Amino acid sequence: MEEKELITKYLNAIYQNIRTAIQSIEDIIKKVEDDAFISELSKEQDGYSCLAKECEAFAKAEKIEDIKDNNWIEKAKLWTSVNMSTLTDNSNRKIAELMLIGTFMGIITCLKDKSDHKGISKELDEIIDKLYNYERNNIDRLLPYLD
Image 1 (cartoon, rainbow, N blue to C red):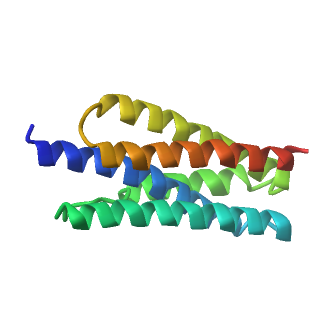
Image 2: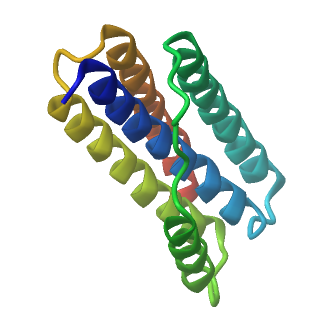
């Protein structure tokens, strides 16, 4: 595989991880009734949006035109999962649990993607490290909502 293809594949993996987080928050925030929790989720969403913009800027700088969001099937599965999981319980505790599960999945994806794309791009390694650290910090901010 050509270098640009490898970079594009790595970029798309990171971007899709970020877009999954953004979509999850968009889908779940509508279920939240607590203003403080809404504020927390909005801050998280803003942080993910900044990381998405970093990916988009990288794509533009590298003249990568095929940066891809998740496909509609993945988006529909995520939306359905959120709605089914909160159908009978939309408490802060339940929503925090769902967010934590998603955050842990994002962390696992970061670790796997970085390992799968070793030595491809230092710039993308920096973005994925930011994403990983951001998600680790989000865990600490979500845990109190399990009480």
